[in-house]
Image 1 (spheres, rainbow, N blue to C red):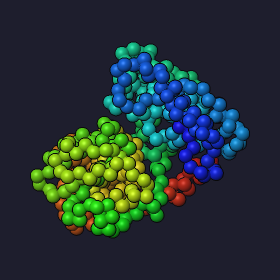
Image 2: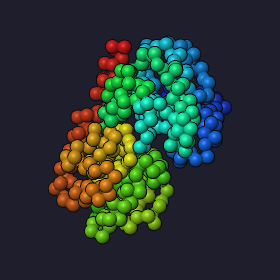
Image 3: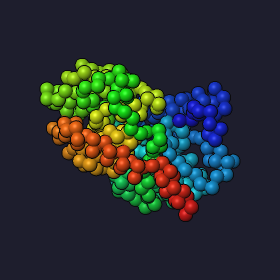
Image 4: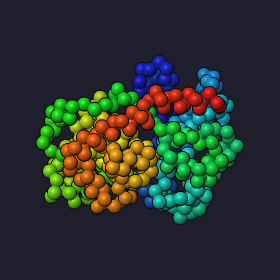
Length: 370
């Protein structure tokens, strides 16, 4: 969004209160076409049509390379990308760049051909808003020579199979992590600081809008935990949302939305982090949890297998199989020696694959050949 929130002088953004408010205004105006679809699903969807002259601001800075990340929320319109003159790298954090407007396609594979009759919009018309957005991307981006980076192998495969990006250069470079910020701390000390029980197995779940976003899979976690509730002595920790405790048959510690400086203690306090997403790229929560020495359990979807090595630093359950998800949680926590081994392996895997300076070097090497 068009909104600067820090005091970092290297970040260029609006210089006034009114300028910052424009970001929210653009977001709402950009979403106006969605008002035409009364059956729109409760999920994020971006049109990116509202004009913007950001290419002029880029020309004024005169960079050697332009590196795009997440550009939605009414920030950078489709047509503006075609006006960028400098060599461009675009790191994708979801599927939006090659779909007709959805950020995750679910079971729909129309992005492989031509969008239309969009299930997210609840549309049955081939020439709907998704088709219009797809055609605009096709028109403006067809001849552009930009390099696409995806953090996960799964997203790279999706981009390669899409009608819009099948001919683009695609590199896989994962997200990096500050391993001084995310590191194991004493489990007992973390629990005491957070007023959590010392004598229970603690199952952690969290994300932005963790219990409200169906894509994050809380409904599967609920079923798995309720399946285990009679056999294991454990409690749950949930961050990212207000409480929905009546849905779980074990005690739940709701943490709400947390500042970054609390996440290290939250991850370290848990015995297992569960990420039962239906579709996901390379979720930071899993990587952060592993960095803090807490093994993760997830369905074997999306980029999960890039981070979780089955039965080495966690457990990959069969997609959407609640029984296997429950088995994975039980397998991780039921033996003390196993938990110790999984914890050490979790930290080691992140040190080997996601250390932030090593990831920065991969990008530096990429810039040098543009």
